[in-house]
Amino acid sequence: MSLYAVRYDYSDQSAARDEHRPAHRAFLGSLATDGVLKLSGPLAGEPGGALIVLEAGDAAAVRTLLLDDPFQQQGLVEHVDVREWSPVLGTRLP
Image (cartoon, rainbow, N blue to C red; front, side, top):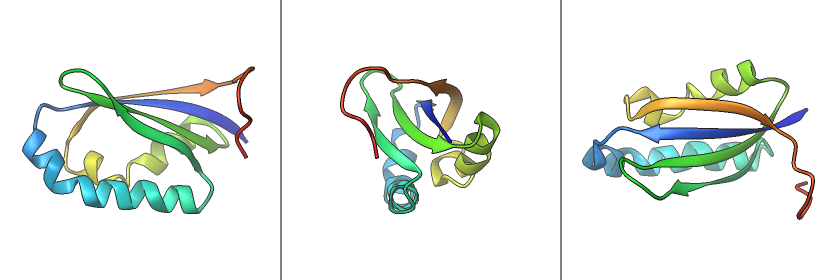
C-alpha cells in the first residue's frame, strides 16, 4: 500500500457545497474509520479546494474510491489530481 496526495479543485457553487458538506464529511469520516484516509482539509483560495491523503494500492483505486464522494456525485469537484506521495520527514502516519 502507498500514500496518495489528492487535490480537489472545487466548483464555485459555494451554496451547493454548504448543502452537501455534511454528507461529504461523513463519507471522508468513514474512510478515516476504515484507516484509508490519513489526512484531509481545505486549501485556501478561490474557488477553493482540498488536500486529501489516502492509503491505497494504486492511483486508479483512489480515483474509483472517491467517485462515491457526495461532492463528486453532485458535480462540485471540477478537477481531481491524484499523485503517489512518499514522505521522507515528519511524523510517521500509522
